[in-house]
Image (cartoon, rainbow, N blue to C red; front, side, top):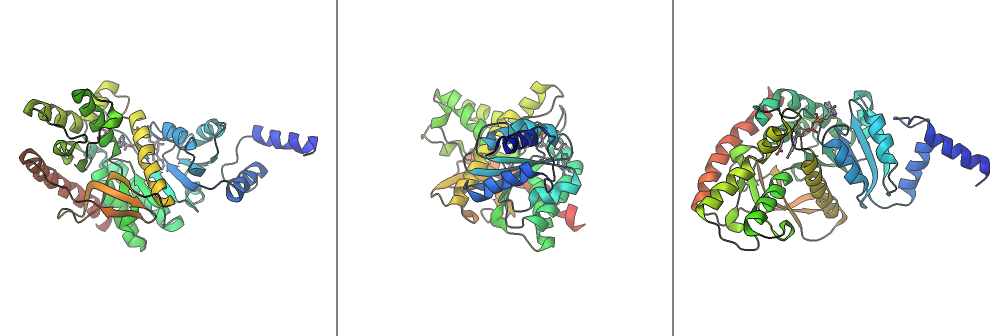
Length: 352
Ligand SMILES: NC(=O)C1=CN([C@@H]2O[C@H](COP(=O)(O)OP(=O)(O)OC[C@H]3O[C@@H](n4cnc5c(N)ncnc54)[C@H](O)[C@@H]3O)[C@@H](O)[C@H]2O)C=CC1
Ligand SMILES: O=C([O-])CC(=O)C(=O)O
């Protein structure tokens, strides 16, 4: 390369990024790099400048399965994008700011991760976020239906028990709904359950697997301690302590942050764990199984979280609950009652 070409290339880096990119030779070149060589998937994060979005962007930029990473938000994406794009990992990063750039952010994307929306403050329930977040999820889902209808969607925005139904109804209206591709992310409940159970058992959390079924709020979060691996038995007190702590894990963080928001770092970790599983499934890896809130016939409810096998087409197999003990059967009935109302609230928001 001639010296003047090299300098032109470097100065292109120093210019403020062009977030639409069409007139920017640097971004065109980046796209060529991504298209021409690096195998991998194109991932968009919607809400990328937020408490979850930023560490999530950081971790997805480190994921070798990602070739292109689109960071969309209604604020602050220029700074976040400039910052993350300096990491010397393979994924090409592009930023998109505001509703006029949503379609560009979504075009050609394989996996959309949505942590957009307001978080809780102490004293609030996740359902208190519904009015604001359902509207945000509706708008973003409309964009997905238009620009990347075949993408896998990982929905983080609360209340997940309702927002998944909102997204499903938007996709149905648009004629693009594929129930195998829409996931409410409940991975943080599993991550917490593994951690808290490992503490009680005196094990490394990486050796522990706790299925957590139901939904993602209070009593709808149902850890199946009778199915913990490695097989373990718990006293009645331990079961009470663990179930309550797992169900209230989100509130524990909200209170500890004292008005500064809810879980962001453990959530970004969990979101990446789940997104990576989706990408491995898309790649065709065998035996990728995680818990997620999906369209399901495991109960009479239209959506329910259980273990799901992830594959090239999304949720390829939804596992049954397995044998439950009496404590879990009672918990399941409580979970289903609250879940039914939350799901209906999401459906009604679009059908009204
Ligand atoms: N599923 C789960 O396990 C968890 C879910 N959450 C939920 O994730 C959501 C985000 O939490 P945080 O990142 O802490 O909040 P945050 O307020 O720090 O970030 C949210 C981001 O969303 C952006 N945003 C707002 N409207 C948008 C729109 N229309 N399009 C794109 N971006 C938009 C904001 O500008 C902000 O940057 C909350 O609803 C929270 O309750 C949080 C933790 C765990
Ligand atoms: O509790 C909240 O509001 C955020 C959340 O969903 C969690 O941390 O599990």
